[in-house]
Length: 228
Length: 260
Ligand SMILES: Nc1ncnc2c1ncn2[C@@H]1O[C@H](COP(=O)(O)OP(=O)(O)OP(=O)(O)O)[C@@H](O)[C@H]1O
Ligand SMILES: [Mg+2]
Image (cartoon, rainbow over all chains, first blue to last red; front, side):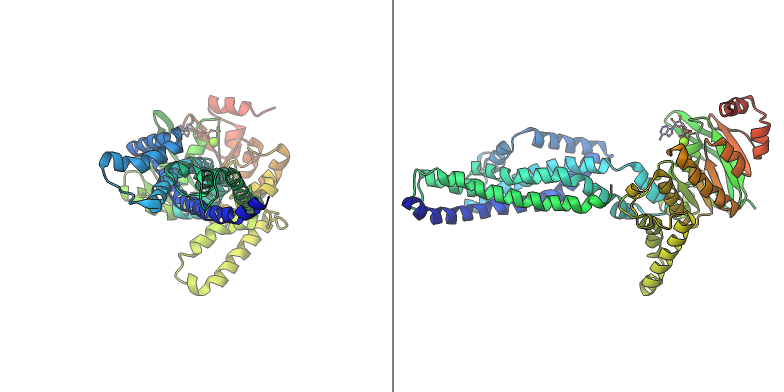
């Protein structure tokens, strides 16, 4: 018990640093994937067949293979095959490679949600706007956009909660996120070794953060409840 | 002079000829009913008038001005079409109200967006907004929805929704108001309230084209009846002529289904 009390502040300090990296990856991914997903969605809905086919194949590959594998390929491929360390070196390089992999992966998932959202708006909405002399831009921003957002908030929320936990996959390329930080105390770090409880303790961070997000996203969903 | 002239309108989807050389005209203040069996091309005809479909051939003229001439590429340009749409209003079978706006918001939206194009919009924003709001309120009261203005579409009955949709179309003061089976999505109980509103509009001499399966209503409200069959105008005339003494066997057969 005494030993635990001694170790606790050291562990928390270290987990905090790891969790900061987790949060960074989480927000960078969201910031990148939300707009990139929209671009991919438009690509896959394009009337230009080669573009829509190409986009659909890319989405299929990204969604059809494990994110962990994508992380490994993106991180190691340039160095091994091209002989060039395009990511640079150290923790920064791991973060950069992780961000690219996560943004791309999540953008593909988001794109499918967006596409579903866009296509679920009845054509009658656009036609009603056209008949009233509105431009297509006005129709998008004043009529369809909010309806789309309302429809995509629940599935996007699911993805966002999944992302919180998925960030731990970056551990595979040794990104120093919270799991990595917790595991360090098994091998030995800062005079603590052979301890597994710090790893288990990371659970608290995940639960608090995903709980917070669930509440926030739930409120957003409620806010959009005033229409159907 | 006729307010609307339609000449040689035709439209083909893939290989089906849906409209075959449609010709008709309409005087200001008149009500024309478009009747005919399912698939005869009534909806397509209205959609062409509202530029939701592009006719393959034909001319559409309003007040003598050629809005569309399939043979003249200048008139078929997308950019020019938007303003031309404003000559027509269209009330859909399924209302197509904007769910995130209140009844009042639905009626005001297009007017507000159009007002932004006015040169004096910046200086007179407030006054313009108030004018638009006032006009929308008057229209909704006229539709019998004075106590429903702040409600969202999902809080309204089908009949109320359709009356909001009519107000929304009227707000832009179209020369010709088109209805595509305005009561087909409604319970029989709610049909009456919508037909009553349309009847009032007819009494105020609103120029209208009404596609309907309500034969008694068509007979009562219209000045002119057009019977369409297989993409053609098979017979037309006064309600008395078409309903009372149909010439064509096909018309007689069609109307026969409605006599009980
Ligand atoms: N976008 C389209 N693509 C292909 N065919 C179409 C399209 N729109 C309509 N049609 C066809 O055109 C024909 C006429 O359709 P339209 O909707 O104009 O008939 P209608 O007289 O309004 O019938 P209803 O009384 O059932 O509403 C039908 O055979 C229909 O299948
Ligand atoms: Mg129809």
